[in-house]
Length: 192
Image 1 (cartoon, helix red, strand yellow):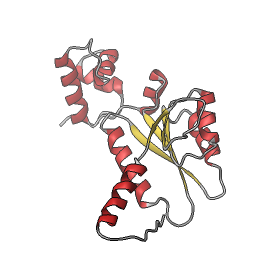
Image 2 (tube, rainbow, N blue to C red):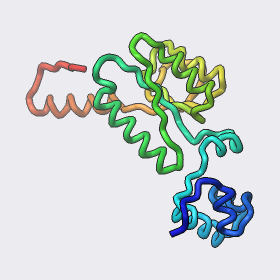
Image 3 (cartoon, rainbow, N blue to C red):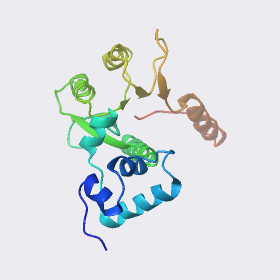
Image 4 (cartoon, one colour):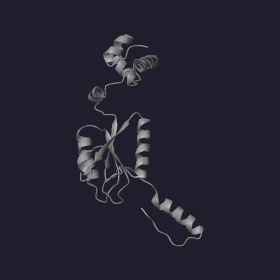
């Protein structure tokens, strides 16, 4: 097994290829022959080479991360639904070569200030915003910055369009009501 390689230059020398060719091969550029891309990828794997994220960010202008701000409100970091949401989001992003970065908004700290830091520091290429409020300063900020985002939840009355995802509560609760009603129940309550 070859010695551990920590720099792109070392990997290129080991393969007797130019740094540019190795870099493009690792990035999956189509102008590099498939055989060369496979050779470079396998050599990098065997040598334990991991690209320098800071260098890659400098060159590409992309961090490779999607950010999300989690408000810490007491001893439990997240509720069970949000935990499942974050897990699914992370798995989905990783399958597309992007990682999820979480930023915590401590109790008493505004989510907007943490979000601003994530955006303005260049830590993320986009963000996911949760717990959408009727008047949401986070969405206004992201729109004003023209920063990519997806909202978990949506505003019904807004003057701008944005990407969102949500559960179909009307349909889900309607089915639950129908099932309980068919079972003979006539008194209902909702605990959230």
